[in-house]
Image 1 (cartoon, rainbow, N blue to C red):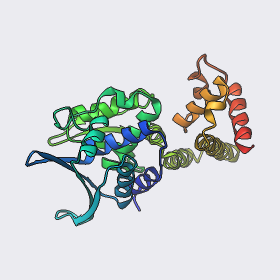
Image 2 (image 1 turned 45 degrees about the horizontal axis):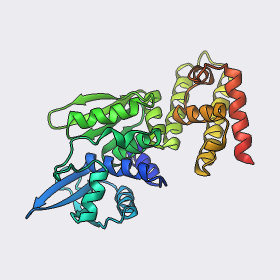
Image 3 (image 1 turned 180 degrees about the vertical axis):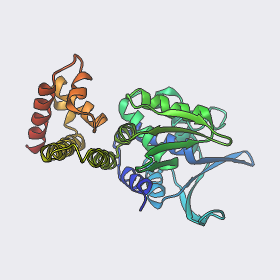
Image 4 (image 1 turned 30 degrees about the horizontal axis):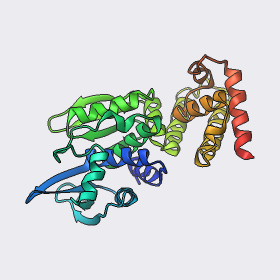
Length: 305
């Protein structure tokens, strides 16, 4: 299974409870993989995706807003004749109302090039929008040529994805090609940060571990056994921290934390591969490496209680 498929499966398993997150994710799905039809004055739409997991995720999102859809399959004629999945949505009044609220359709039922900024007004919504974009039209390549991209039909749509990510300190570049545009990232650190923002923490950790292993091999002649052990401990410590923070997040306990602990938790979730020293500099005000380490250890203890 490819890394892209692993990422899609991990993201498709996330079921956000907040309505704003579901709206943002649904909006991204339709903007990246939606098709709009007008027949006899009635609107209909369909989503065209490559994964059954993504199709089920979209079906569930639509159903959460009381919108009916039908999943169909077909084989692509070109390339590898892979199976594709389409969700067909009839343009009922309820469907139109939901898609207007999600920034997919305008007041005249025209498809919008990009949704309104209110759709990504919160940090959780920005993560959900990136998640929907990756589910619908994203790809991730592993080393030796790590690359992440989200394909869109227009430059404006790609810029919207990049702007939403930038508000969470995740840098995506935009490139316009002949018949489409992409928002993309290169380099393991940037890709890991984008995946973590979307919610694919396991994939982000896997890339981080690959980066550590690559550095270890490149400098094998000058690294001592103690250096190697330290890298392993650092990777394991980051994994333990993220597992604890994800547990607190799932149990909706992050809001119960003190402001300093909550800030540290959010920074680690947003930057899973960042060293403690750099993580400390992102605190407001900046903290020491030892202080951030103590906070993370306290968060682990809180998650275990």
